[in-house]
Image (cartoon, rainbow, N blue to C red):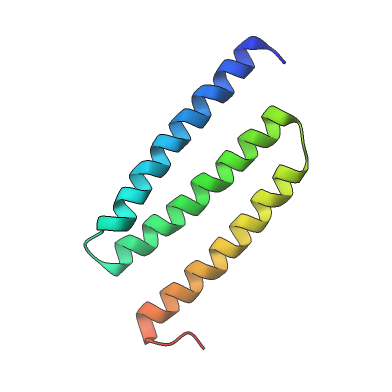
Length: 91
């Protein structure tokens, strides 16, 4: 692997971890439930991006499939939580 690409991937992963830390802070101390839900969505997206960067780093297709599954479950969870916040019930 190119040393410049390796450096860029490492820097990207570090910045994603920092971004996930900010999302976790908002998740734990968000003033409202809507802020916490938005933070949860943000964490799912950053997790998916981390999986995609790891797929590039290790040249593996399994990470792409894992990222797809992570986003699908994150979307379903977000829809369920939003429906619960609006109506008070999921089903």
